[in-house]
Length: 453
Ligand code: GLN
Image (tube, rainbow, N blue to C red; front, side, top):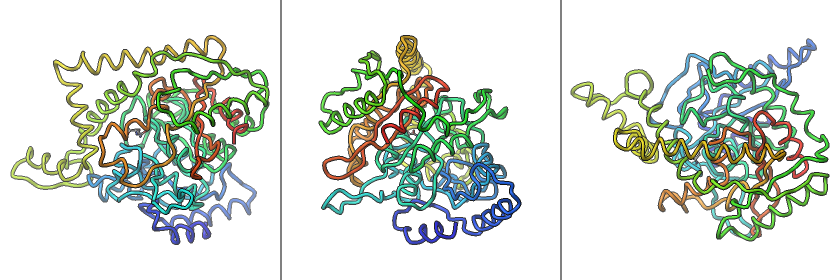
């Protein structure tokens, strides 16, 4: 714990942590030492972790990296983080993220952008770590914590993991409790871990996952020993390669890595087959209707009365307006406007309802290939390696949204997806491959990812 606290101090330029909690960390570590001495060792005993600032931590400031939650100190602990502390993990601090987890580069945070510890060969341009869990990805990649939590609504664990050469898994919807996590789009949000190895990710997920009656969408199923799946044989597993993911203009090196990944799985005994997921191209537009719709509804609670910041006005309506105008950043305001529009009378059927129907078709595509015996689907995790700070933020927002083409389908269908480092780009940056599994079969993903890692 002391070594990680020192590393965090030395790497403050990355802006990965928005709050360091050294006193809490050292107390928790001492407790851990006591338990170890007493022979009472938990699954994650003494393991120092960073927590994305979307998770409520009791008595520890939680902001979702928004000015509107400035100085919000929760009186409760999220279920996922409680599970980690129950197993002996140590809290190092809270990690930076895009404001309310909206973004793909960690540049929309009220605390400023996070830098990736990576650089292109022979080029000192600062690169984004991806987003929205950019602080988690950067901190794990730079050895500022042994592992971290993330949340993934459309790719926010898998895309930053791919950009930073770390392992990130979004489990099946319902596997981890959403209780005490700041809500973005409730039907898509899932928590998951970031780690430096597949084995570490398996350990972390085992601790984080589990049924929780406080989240009505949490699923009551036993959590398997994921670590056992790491290194297990993948002989006879059927891997689908979806032709619709071979997008126009995809970089040759991404395509080459994808083929190479399929070859590694084949060499380890898996059977690789071509499959079709015909509604893939509608996933991104449908996601950018469903996610903002749910966000606009969830964010209605930030009214200057119940949480965080308040900017006074002459009457209560003006107080709401002043608070929300001052508290939300530009990307969050854009989402609230899009979401309010697609939910409004007269547009609901044309946008929101239609997007929900598209969502069912996307899910059905996956159901069909799984029914045909496919165990997992292999795709690239991202359409490109990490880009430079500022490179995409000012451009058309759609350009930023395109980062999510390979990841949003998984949230729309509620499936588990893992991003695993698989190689380097020509200019020396990490590239990831994504494996998508059947519902509640995260074990298969761990077994397959271990072969690629
Ligand atoms: N980049 C996507 C968005 O901005 C996904 C974010 C996320 O998964 N939290 O909505």
